Length: 370
Ligand SMILES: [Zn+2]
Ligand SMILES: [Zn+2]
Image (cartoon, rainbow, N blue to C red; front, side, top):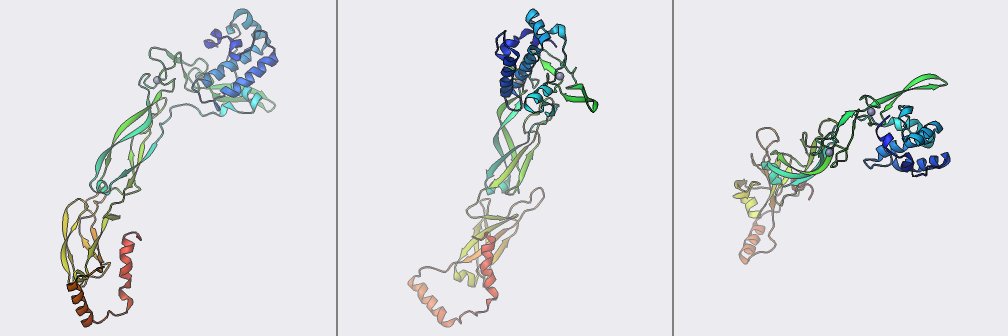
């Protein structure tokens, strides 16, 4: 063991005096270890500091090493090699450091977001720029976590393997305990100076503008997957994906039913009885002629072919469904009143057979019960 151990004052690390007793050292370590344990403390340098205080504790509670340290300010002569943080921590707190995840290449997280678009955008398709806050590879260190110009070397504790093996003797026999290298955290490499921008994480938070291509025909609740636009991976791992959930705003005069567009046309009793030809608007802003057949019933549907929503990812499109809403006038001119009175007197009242009553519900079903 070399490096930080020889240049650090172990007494200062633990915050005790040079004459501190074992008991004082033990209690100082215990207090610091609780604050700095990597499972509790998420500060980027906590793991490093935890290792340092543990090393200080190991040395200062071993009479021979402490004496050597006091005399020479160094422990290199001892060559105490790998030390078992895990074991030590277990002794104190019952935790288990060795079960921490191995830290090889890690894929970046997938990101999810939701956007709201107009029905017309879903019909025509469009591009849309969204801002995605995400972790990207740090520009300063290019993801290495090392300050530019600083050296990256193979971890001397594990020789680059990222894990350490300890042979342990127990009443059941000898067994080999493999654990994540406490020095490099499993990366196999150590950095002599961490990147000032990302503090060694290799990634930094950025707001990135991404242009989404919304295909014609997309429906409410569908998801766009944008490969490789999630968060940057770590230690050479691949980038995650971006998932965009599509929500479609209600339109004031069209309602979508799969790839058909439902539209309600209000007509007078006379138009319903005699039939008519009228212009109706289409979703894309044009107009189309619709023929109301004679004796049209309230709630009857007239289909206008090919004026609906394009099929997603295939040719063709749905229809515009025009539902006829027969509107009884709320007020009448003198002339209208005279004519309606004549009609009432010569018309027989409608039959009370309920065969047409289901038509009344059709418009409600088509409009989603409203
Ligand atoms: Zn960096
Ligand atoms: Zn290592």
